[in-house]
Length: 68
Image 1 (cartoon, rainbow, N blue to C red):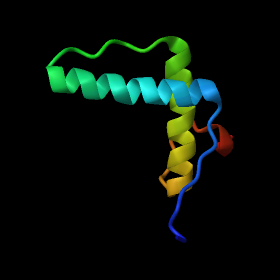
Image 2: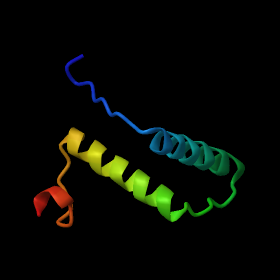
Image 3: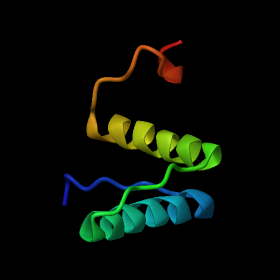
């Protein structure tokens, strides 16, 4: 497919993404509150979302590092 998007993830980011998606799904299903991620998880997932946004052609935040 020409519309495919591919991301390469380091193991820590992949584990964080899996854990986040799993936890959100389980908590939503159970009606439980979602716990806050660690600072490292927030930073890794933030980079992942930034990179995915770039690949999808989303407009960047003014603080995006490649605009400096």
